[in-house]
Image 1 (cartoon, rainbow, N blue to C red):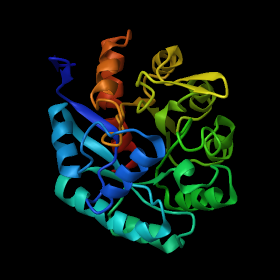
Image 2 (image 1 turned 180 degrees about the vertical axis):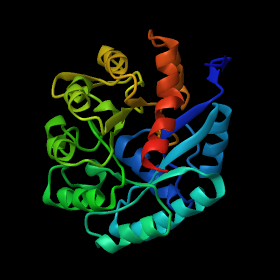
Image 3 (image 1 turned 120 degrees about the horizontal axis):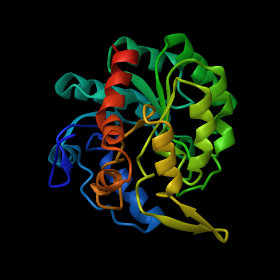
Image 4 (image 1 turned 45 degrees about the horizontal axis):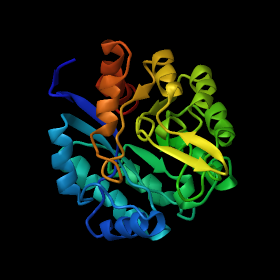
Length: 284
């Protein structure tokens, strides 16, 4: 692994949110009004891309989720633009209220490589009828899913608690990436990774030094469980930053991974080797 001034020269970031500029104001409004927080960096996609390149990122999994069903088609066409012009891996949009044909078309046109779902934002539970219908479609299409897991500012664990992923993990064979290492309950992701070889996770949020007090209980993002999962499953964890939808410095996730007390060969796997294998196995 080559590191120059704390920047690794080869990274695949599997949790990036490059959105069209016309969507950007909605994210600013959501972050600033809902959470009284100021985004740490501009959300415009070209500035984000410059920052990623400065960090040493060579490729990304770009993620778009449809907050409302009307956004799905536009976002998937956007993903097609990024894929054609930048060679990104694209996990496209779909809303539980959309017709199946929209997702099928996006795959057939080559706009997207996989699907991104965000239950706390889209307001459905991962074990709901709406979710199972989407999983059945992905199983038929043999396409991967990246889905939010763990604590979320709007609604805590209401739509993303650990036991809500049992139906997804134990009943389907398509590859699944549980985003954020089930942040807030990271230890509970162990049984999923232990049971199924088609299940993966990634580090976005899980390497951010954040502490939340909720109902008198402490919720830690970056904790000892994160290190233990990385060491226990070194081939199943990817690096993710969640850039640019962050209210911390974008480099924090990378620097905390580099400082983590694990073997450098494991860090290499997390930073890019595991993602390379995933691409070769499931997306070629």
